[in-house]
Amino acid sequence: MPNQKNKVKFGLSNVHYALLTTDESGNAVFGTPKPFPGAVNLNLSPQGESNQFYADDVAYYVTVANSGYQGDFEAALIPDSFAQDVLRESLDETTQVLTENSSVETAPFALLFEFKGDQHAIRHVLYNCTAARPNVTGATTTNSKEPNTSSLTITAAPLADGSVKAKTTADTPEAIYNSWYQSVWRPGAGSEI
Image (cartoon, rainbow, N blue to C red; front, side, top):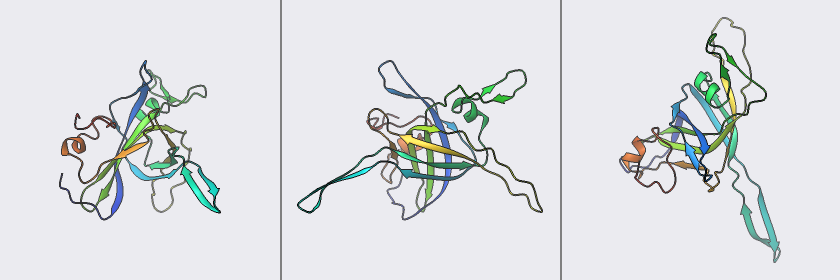
């Protein structure tokens, strides 16, 4: 990848999700990323308290906790695969009807996506996400057809090792950049991908 740095970013595309489980040792294990087509908007705000310790009549020591991010992801439609894998809706094999059950918890996942730039796309991964059930919305059709969208509230928390998110840069090796959606990149992975 050329080492030309972006001056601006715009757009949202290539959204994928990968299921997150833990092995016997408590280490994070990610499934193969699956596409989540129809991305419209992603708006996540940082979470975490800031604390100030005052001494000598000034803020002598300031610390900010990184508790991840929370916000909304808007898409054209929630794919059935995401409804089953993450929201844990069950598919009846005979009727092909998805059913939501109040006693089932949603599954954690990694969220992968990219923002376009004037030089190249910046690819991101949020490692430990949970999604709240989407609102059920709709509106009547008038003299123009405007699509309704679906929104999920996403919470991205740190993994046990503290990792929250990662993103590519202008200097990311091509092998890592090109395989971003084949597996979830992890710190310490280097160019093994």
